Image 1 (cartoon, rainbow, N blue to C red):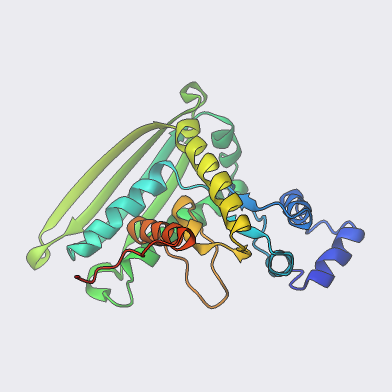
Image 2: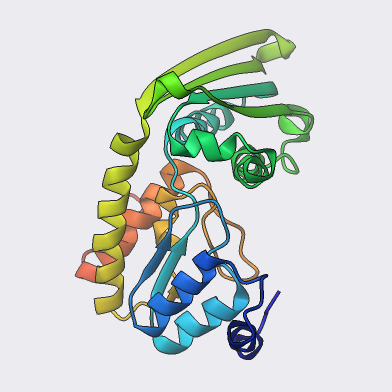
Length: 254
């Protein structure tokens, strides 16, 4: 859809209904030279046309969907399971939340976008093609339930069925009681500061080093998004070190 900037701008002039309000906001920010960070699961700055525009105008962009709650837990736990070569049979996740986010996601069409970002995390981290005996046949289920009394509180339940030496079955149960705003607020602050830093340091286009903050991080064409929280953190730290002229962190012994 509107792969070229020329077609996108033509669609704007013709009030093309396929161009969403969030894409218009992104376009306006980039045209004004303001870095754009998409914290929602909907399509914002991800189209080829807007990536092209950001590159041309030297504007940093990143997104999408802030990584809080349950997906944060997955990107913490899954790398640990993989590091110890523990196999995975299934991962069942359900959420209870009562704020506006929960009300919107109670709609099946709105939930589809969120579901894709939640489900893709495990597949990318565990690399089933490289470890088929451990991760090829995972049953991964995600559900979101709107429950108004919860308000801004969010409750995530995870059941993880795993297996170890000689296929011996085990389970992990996780209950995460949290608040959406408390988890999201520092992400917004960090992204504002780091996006401004990227602009002042000459960064333009997709900022992959900010993947640490997103469920569905953007990446350059031909690359795969990185979901492992610890690899994301290393990329974030090393980019900041590079910008400041410090030595980057490596695993080499001195």
